[in-house]
Length: 412
Ligand SMILES: Nc1ncnc2c1ncn2[C@@H]1O[C@H](COP(=O)(O)OP(=O)(O)OP(=O)(O)O)[C@@H](O)[C@H]1O
Ligand SMILES: [Mg+2]
Image 1: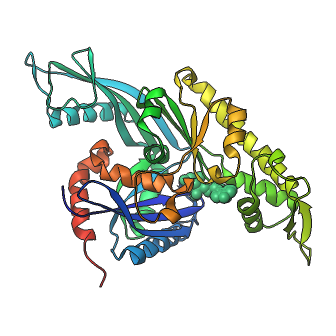
Image 2: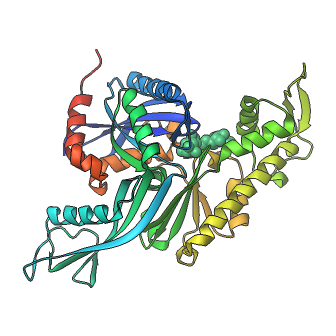
Image 3: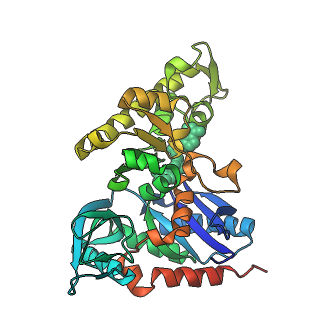
């Protein structure tokens, strides 16, 4: 293994753009060596709403990560999320002319190419074709068929697609910010990579990444991804409820939520008071904290109800034995786990990014699950099968190599 591999991920969220620079050591451990974050502007639920603002936000975040890491960033792995994302589960197989042969990497790639061409949908771009499992000769389930002898190779795939308009607008904005997006990853897949344990995936688990604008859902059954969805609900709605009810600015509402945010009214001392600054008042006014928490609890329960409706439609719940893991910024709200357990009627764990070193005082929070997950995926990049467009034009693995070479240039 190369001694020093520098990799970069950019999480373009509704509230923030985070850039993380990681270094993979000779043992394959991931060390974070740079971090940059900017307020996200011109981007809403993965859709570009203002090009110039979006470019500035990305550039600002990248500049900070360049300063902290000392590297010039040219390429990165970038996330995609939002209701414009869709999935398909499909199967494909290859039979070999000869009675039996050794399965090669090329065979696996041509199976992927076959499923990608079948999954193609007008006006959609394929982001992932994730192999859930391989089956050889109709009977043996194998994780990695390369090198095995068989006469038939079959695979089940989870395919994630994004609307072409959202995809190309996002891609163009990243390129205009001076970064080549070497790979795109769905939010849910990235977050699941950094917070879920293999045992949970084997037992069947639901991952919820509740961010500012979207809730990204992934369901793993028997170790493999079975369902992904990105629904347009998140912490911004809690903020807006606070702003409306207490007649404070959106910024004040956001600060109140983060500073005093609790998910359960009973967990708050009914006598406790906080100061708020409503519009038109010269002086702050005092309110019971329980009023604020009441607003938060009601909206969080509403968000959970919408998620429950989506989950029920999947008809997978009977196969989920490890409960729910919640990550994303909203997971920071105190006592959210307890409220979620009562609402969903199952075990809930708050998921934080794992398996990395460095910057942990900054990054050990649920809102960094996507960024760290993307770096982990890039580190273990054999798991990534890029979209046909990227395969065709650039070749992901060559691109990564080029990227490693170029990123090594120190600034000065
Ligand atoms: N300590 C906290 N208490 C309450 N809410 C919080 C806290 N920290 C973050 N949040 C909320 O989490 C949300 C941001 O989460 P996150 O950073 O995961 O979103 P994002 O990735 O920018 O957006 P999205 O993924 O939806 O596009 C905001 O609504 C923010 O107010
Ligand atoms: Mg996010």
